Amino acid sequence: MASSRHIGIIGAGISGLRCADILIQNGARVTILEARDRIGGRVHQSTVGDHTVDLGPNWIHGAGENPIMTIADETGTVMYDPEGGRHVSYSRDGHPLNDDVGAKVQEFVWTTIAEAFQHSNLHGESIPAETSLFDFFRERVQQTNFSDEETQLCLDACRLWGTYVGDQVDKQSLKFFRLEECVDGSNFIVASTYKRILEHVAKAAVAKADIHLNEPIISIKAPPRHNPSPTKHQVTVTTATGTIYDFDQVVVTCPLGWLKQNISAFTPALPPRLEQAINNISYGRLEKVYVTFPHAFWHTDNTSTSTTNTVFAQFLDPSYTPHPALIEWNQEFVSLASLPEPHAHPTLLFYTYGDGGAEIINRISELDPSSAEYRESLIEVLHPFYSRLPGYSAENPDCVPVALLATQWQKDVFAGNGSYCNFQVGIQEADVDVEVLRSGDGIGPLRGLWFAGEHTAPFVALGTTTGAFWSGERIARLICRGFGIGEVGGMGVKDDSLPSAGNGA
View (cartoon, helix red, strand yellow):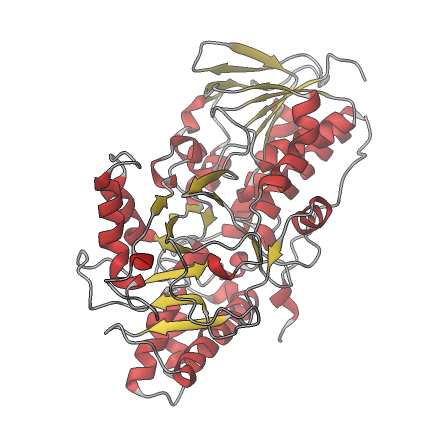
């Protein structure tokens, strides 16, 4: 193909890298502009103590028909299915629920989630926009014969669905809750991290694309095209370094949060309906805190086949630790000591979200992660929780953290100051908004400007790494089609069908 067909990709995350891969395989010249000093975007690793951990996604949601799962298998990435692992819930006063009550609570939560997906699918058009997922939880628990205590425990546990959507469930739209549904199949923790998956997705781009790091975008000029040829270098991108690039077509894979804050970077202005879609879809606030100990003191049974060691723990509306009024302080962790060898390590991974997550991050955002103040601040927050675990003793040095690390996506301007898209109460046409974002409201063919990312994914993969991968492939194939150069190398992109859509009448 003629080298004049030059595609610019803004962002070297999973979406941008997959887009580059398909374009390169079909002979396009590709330049990637990345604001950070590395590739990967929100897929990134760091260390806590001597252990490598994922700061961004560390799950694969839905093993069925999932290209990320396929890549994990091909690259020898080690997966862990925590299903069946011991799950312990702690009541408001800090005591573990007995197994029967805990199982009853979890069964209610997961049954109601499935019912909410189905209800949103079947009755979305008639559900008021202001109705929240938590409203649905309350309605359903009132239809049970649970005791008052069990009812409260169920509602407290339901609030922790916030770790999935990245914000409080009383903000989550019930009308469009179906858009939070994932690919069918088991959910896996990526035990050996996303490192090999990222390397695989990036292989073609690293080898054959022109990648420019440390190039934040400040301006994208994409005027309407009066000449029908797609190869006239009509999109101009300016970076913070003052460098100007000219492209035939540009794919913007910046996070939704970045788009929200930088709509003015586009000249001419984006179509009003596209701007509306960007503003309508919400942006989550999920954070992680890793706490590493000398040994996994909570593993009271060290046999390899143990089913008694805690894998998940939830702390429901704790009354035993001070926290700001009117902020949810529920916490949840997964034990990384339960991962398969050699990837297991004595670390608790806490997921925190919404206002509570923001409060924790605000406390440490100005602190050096190597400082005593940083360490003490996180311990102050989390000690009341991990000190409830079996095997804990204040006198035991194994119960004193040796390393702590918190993500701070809400403070990361290149991540758009958040985590991933979600759909909050008040939104009227979330499904249409996603479709508008995907199509750019038609400006791709007219202005050579395209959009990709987890916020433009098939409905079943919104907010996921899989969705970002699919979105990059989809846009690359559209551009290849427009150039008439073929579409080799694709793994296929999922349609918008949802698993729960067929589960009822």
